[in-house]
Length: 97
Figure (cartoon, rainbow, N blue to C red):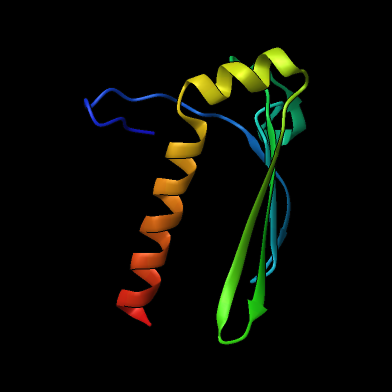
């Protein structure tokens, strides 16, 4: 990941499930070859895509191991960051659509 100030952050993780055009599940708790990870931000995310009246419903469900980690992620700008990604994805889809 690259922040607006140019700083980069490795975000290693593992995809747990990929169902084309439907669902992606990933976690920061595992790395390649299913090796356990020591993550600075332990999280598992489920992203689903569903057809809805000529559009696509994008739903992101993010799970944290505890409330403290969830709160820290929120304070880091979780909602703003994920919403920015959704806006960029929407703009890209419209551009190629």
